[in-house]
Length: 308
Image 1 (tube, one colour):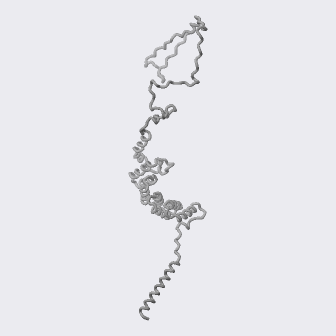
Image 2: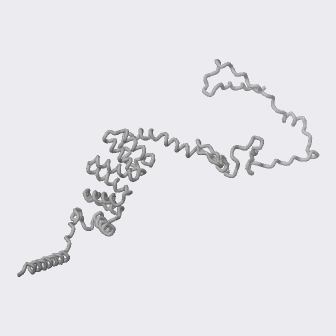
């Protein structure tokens, strides 16, 4: 056989082998991905485990949803699968560069594992993506306080309280009883709180006549609340409205009889109607002679005259 025929035969054999390899690759089924670590520990019928399976199905249908990944991580963390939960949080942060809840939840997860440095980094990432989220500020301040970084802790506590003043209430934020720096954070926020209160109470209006000028330091009666349509300020003294009595208090006076029908009074009646003689009370003794009554000087009783 000539060399040319041998080369053609070898080329044909190589082409046939390549075709067979390609056909085998197409017919070969892809290997199934290994089951997640948590799945073999789930109990059918358990409420939390059923929610995990349901959310797993939704994540498989929409794998690019950062919100679903975050919620799925929360369920896995509640079921005590920190590794799988961490993977979901990190995937959510990768999918959405503005998502901050996954970073906050990742910080909580690191705290449960005792990884303080990583938790601080996660809370910082959450604040970097959402500076107005008070929970991250408070948690970060708490970790700073544990490490003895009190100045940084006060800064974070103050920011959290400025954003959400209700975090002072233990019913809203039970962790507030765990800090010794709340007074310093409140002192740092005092100028801000004072300015905010002054703005709410002493703001100047462009049209002051439209608003009532009622005192702010005591309770009010209904008479003190001005009508918005009435002019501001008290009325002048000469135009003040007179005091009017209710209809029940104003009784009409009895009409006087005509002069022709009136009879002159007798001398006995005149003496009986004469006013009694004016009695002058005895002069008060000097201060040194007064008895030490709490209410001041009490004059002695006037002696009564014996009947003649």
